[in-house]
Amino acid sequence: MSTTTIRLEEQLKARIAQAAARAGKSPHAFILDALANTVEHDEIDAEMHRIAEERWAKVQRTGATVPWSEAKAYIQARAAGQKAARPSTRKTQR
Image 1 (tube, rainbow, N blue to C red):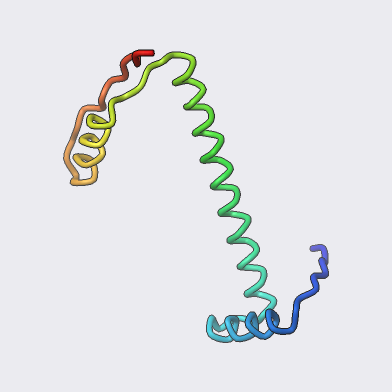
Image 2: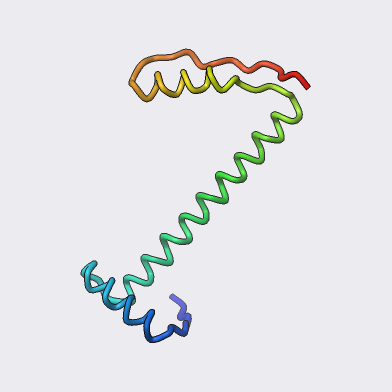
């Protein structure tokens, strides 16, 4: 395991100590958890952006989309636990 030094303003250091105490952790463990959570959220965001860019490129290339009204009805049915047929894509008018 490597060591990294960070400089914290005294006010932030005190806030971290208080938050760590409330969480029942040491300040060190609290900071490690905070960093791990931040990195995980960043990785999830990056993957979502990658997927969105990939799908947007496909829409631009093919022109095929699903009308929002059909997508919404499908999502609502699935959220209600109902079986629903996936809406089919169609070419948009340009």
